[in-house]
Image (cartoon, rainbow, N blue to C red; front, side, top):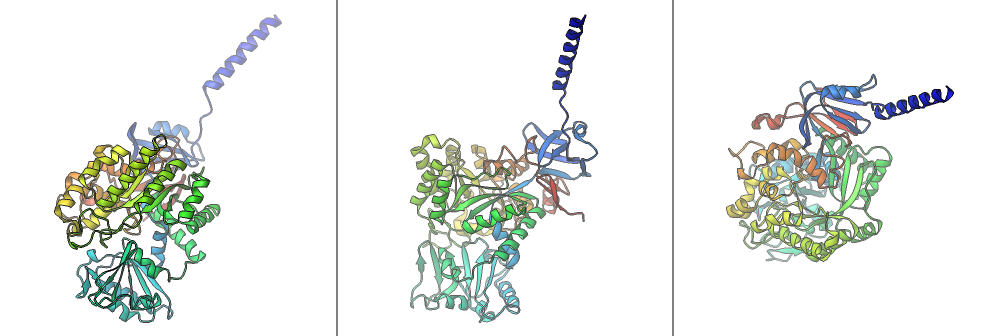
Length: 575
């Protein structure tokens, strides 16, 4: 009898064990989002009804009925009330501290004439101390409504600027960052007032140029690496201003629905700043940083140290940024054929191509992605050539390199298929097309524009993803503008009808993916973000209307109303 009792008891315990194992305790969500259209950018389901998260991870994405099984009395609820949600947007190429300092310094992004720049500086002079530097960024002569009477190679001269700021040195960076504009006081401090002899029409330095007038006097415009002639004299930033600029950049990201940021080129000081911000709990945007290629000692140190992939996915370093040519607006982009509006000029090779190959080999050996800036067709070709040499030399290390070309704006038709052949990712900022295309045809001519400029659809169809972004502070960080440019190929004023080279438009699905999953892929992070899928990070962007279905002419009216980062609401526009 006792034996039979033990047998029954044992069987009962085994049954209890089986039931316990087959019915594990359901996890509970800290946040449940529902009530609107939720685009997942996940191939298994385009949209879902609800998303449940636990702390900073996605628990479930699917039907509202199933999602509610993760809810308890502590779960926070967000009713979208008909609004639209996507994965958190990723700025695929920008300059984080440039964004922050643009908020602190003179912002010339919206100036429409040379006189507007002069007026802005004159206003700042009123509150500046004598001798204090006035710095700013954002002017772009090709976007002005009118040009001044006196120009040299299509650029203004310093005289009007110097008149309103005789005692304050002034340096104003071009929107592209590839040129700058100095007044007489700044050039005097730099010892450049007698830079050229009479009759000198061109004054070049390694990787750059000082524009001079017919008499050989500097006009105030410094192109590419010639900018250092002035910038080396500008006082260093302070730790206080750095911290303030960092915080302003974080806030700007949140306001625009940006939860991750690919920072295109940082040095030791910025790395130290980011580490400090992270240790103080202020890193509320995920930063994927590229080491600046200008500092060889920095690169060598990191090759020895190895990549840094943060377990919290807040601050990652595993790539190198190389600046290989200039910008089209300043005629610094390196071209195979001369500029249509300056037939004696091909642009600038701002970094030796041998160093591109050397860095590519080092990148493969030490696990670092290489991201090379190239706007002109020659720069793109030369970089693809160097990448290919490195891949052939170290084939066993080139299986998943994810090397990138930043911008890839103007390509020779023969080089377009090479991106897919070499598995090189183009990181292209669609809003540049919107801003630049009206005047870019003057630089390149119709044939080069139509055959090789902003070739989004050709690149996508060849089999490579595109990483989108804004190149902030070259352009405002607003991702809606870049999304609109991607799908319309129009200026932000809605012209021309049908868009420029409409066959190269992205679909809306492609454009959203370029700002989410493809951007995550471009940073080796597609396994943890970029789509709304169980197990990925709880980063989301919420909009006041459905940018995937709203009429094209209304896309630019779309507003970000909420940003969720790491499972927490970090921006909420209740207006």
